[in-house]
Structures are given as C-alpha cells and as structure tokens.
Image (cartoon, rainbow, N blue to C red; front, side, top):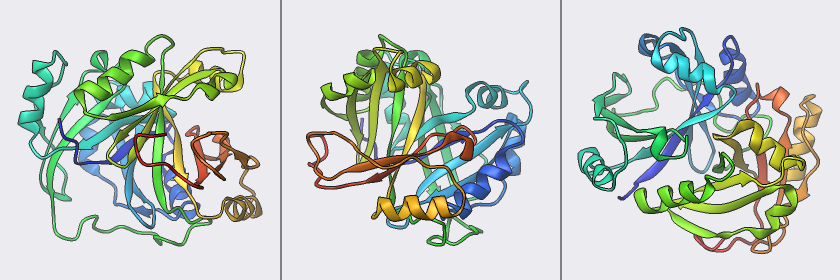
Length: 306
C-alpha cells in the first residue's frame, strides 16, 4: 500500500485545557491556528488545528473531550494527555481498504467527513487490534482552494523557530514491538531500520520506521526501573515524544528559559549513525502532558539507515 504523506496527528489534552494548549502551540512554537470546528461536537470533542513548521507544515489537531458518552469524546478522554490517531494520506481509499482486508487487517468502511476546508474528504480507521493498540486513520480528500483557511498566528513568530516535525515515538506495550513493526512494514509499506541496541541502557528497545519522510520510532520498555523504560510503561500504547527540528538548540533552550518555560539541558542523542546531534525536552507541565522534544540534526544518514 502506498502512503502519499503523513499530514498530521491528533494531540489529546484533558478537558478544559484545549484553549491553553492552542495558545502554547501558537505563541511558543509559532504555529498557525485554524478556526474552531463546530461540527466535531457531534462526535463528543472540541478541536482546533495547529500547523507546525516553517519549512514543511504538519497538522496537529489539538482536541479535548466534551461528551464522553459519544465515541470520539470517550476516546479522547481515555488517551489524554497523549497524541493519537496518526493520519495517512492515500490516493485511493477503496483500494487501500480492499488490500488491508485481503491481508487480514481489520479496517472500517470509509465514511464521508463533514470538513468545511475540504471539497470532499473520506476516512477510514484501522482497528487498534490490528495495530497493537495504535490508532491509524486513512484519508483521501480534495482540499478547497486556499486551505488552511482563516489560520491565525505568525508562522515564524513563536518563541522558537521550528523548521519541521521530524517524527514521533510509538510506545508499545512490552512484548508487542515486533508485531507493531511488522504491521507498519507489511500493511503500510514502511521502511524499517535496524534495532538501536544502544537504547537498552535507557530501559527500552527501538527501531525506526519511515512513512515517506516522517519517522516513527517504534519502541517498548525492557526495564521499567530506568527512565525511558518507566515512561514507556506508563504511556503505552501511545504516540508520544513529538520531535521538533530546530537549527540551533542552544538558542531555542535560551529563548524558552527567558520566557519561564522549563526545558532540559541538551544532551547528545548517542546515536552512532549520527554526528553532532542533540536533543532536549520541554517539561510536560508546560505542554499539558504532551511530550515535546527539540532536535538539532547533525550529519544524518539516508532514510531507512538510522
């Protein structure tokens, strides 16, 4: 199956925190913000889209539950705070559904989405039982001219300048990482990198998976007495650690701290496939429980060789 692009993901926050999360993405990360989407209330949630990146826009649909008796409201409340529902653009959603079902993957029928920014938009959902608990959405649509419309907030005017979203971690329940990797490879056509054995000292296993230029780090806890292993066990199964590529991580850290935002010191990634690559984390208390990582890339190998 051919994935055209990974256009975005849902970022679920606890009820009552959506407006503050929107302000953070706009004022700190420089994201453009789309208008409220009132038609989503019928599914039990509120949402606004944040468009992150100066070189390449990535959509984060920030959402909060308003009615847990409705399906998506119940889901948003259950997973918050974390990222959820990874969106995958495809050319022919009917062909993709047929191909997935032929491989034994559980997938819903397509349904038309009432989205005023699209001339026509169809979606289907892959059942979490086929993905080891992760929510994956297929999308086929034709945006209206000039979309995203009514986006507010300076694209490059945040406290830090985010060039692009580099990827996100898919934190697996222990023992399911290999099955998850197989799903992304065999069902979705992802390129899979070798196991990153140096991650074991942090209490986790991990492999990279590429859907186009978007990188998923598929991982699971191996020792929950170590920091990363403990974090994985707490959140799994969930998408977390949202990667934000910056040009100068020292400048980004300094700018955030000047505004009173808690951020870690930078550390080298310790990835032998990279040189001079550093990362830092914005404290989750600043981001309403969502884990955001700043990443300054050094010398990077080609996709699929991480």
